[in-house]
Length: 407
Image 1 (cartoon, rainbow, N blue to C red):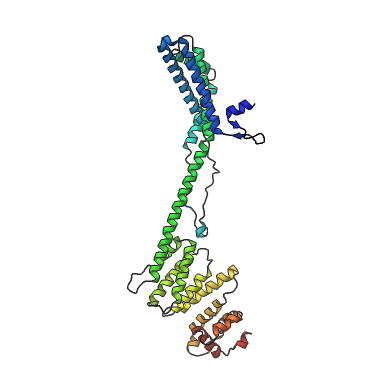
Image 2: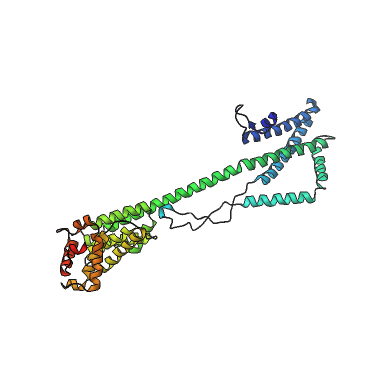
């Protein structure tokens, strides 16, 4: 069997190695078989002798052309039978974008064009069906075709013509079938890989453009002069939504830094930009995962003039809810800041009077939660630490509360 393996393309690397299949060698040796057939036609034509070159050329031309036609016809038929089919489970695949935390899915799904597969499938079924129905007629038609070809090969050559047709059509069929089965799937896969790569490159380019636009708009909003045009909150939010996660983190850092720089020129203009950016970050957080967006917005709202204590309290409350829902430890300063927001909204405190029971309880609960972080509590409430500590000490004095009550 070793000669058969060598003929169809198997090759042994060494005595201990397993058989390796090389499709290129198999197809090449099929062409050798076709070439042997052509050589036999040439040998047959030479029987006329060199004195009758016209007959030699005629027989060679007709024989080789008939064999080539049979080879091509068999190759086309083998190709139709060997066309690979695309796997399709009938489901629409959705592709999540990891940079967007899986919140956005592809609106369309593409699959390869299978027209060639369908046509090949139809034709093979038609050919097989017609062949089975007309199986008794086929031999006669084949003999008639052989007689027609034999007219160009000389007298009494129907057998040779029939042999040429069968020989080359079988070679062509096997070659076309193997070529379609061995090479087309690889080329289809390569084409799909290239298309996917192009789509990834296109998505990357779009992502980079969106990131650059978001960063440029952030810089414009944070460094806007008082007489510069104002970008609407919707424009800012849409630009931030289109940015990648890493860029949104970078935008948050820039907004946080600008919010803390209270001594900057045109701070009132800049803090409006900070608020717009933080609102955009909150809108882009569709899973409500980042509590610091809300807390930083609360800080910005109480830093602007006039302060928006009610809105700041709502944002810091939202930050506390997200922190608790996610089971995040720490961040007790949120309670301190909410206590301050409630103190500043307390009408009794603004009149220098003790708070009513409901307000006193809500504020005291927040102070107790902040006091549980003892080390930071001392830093937050020590003299000279700012307006927050001063207002809290004043409220405690008005309501006869001291640190012993927190213990």
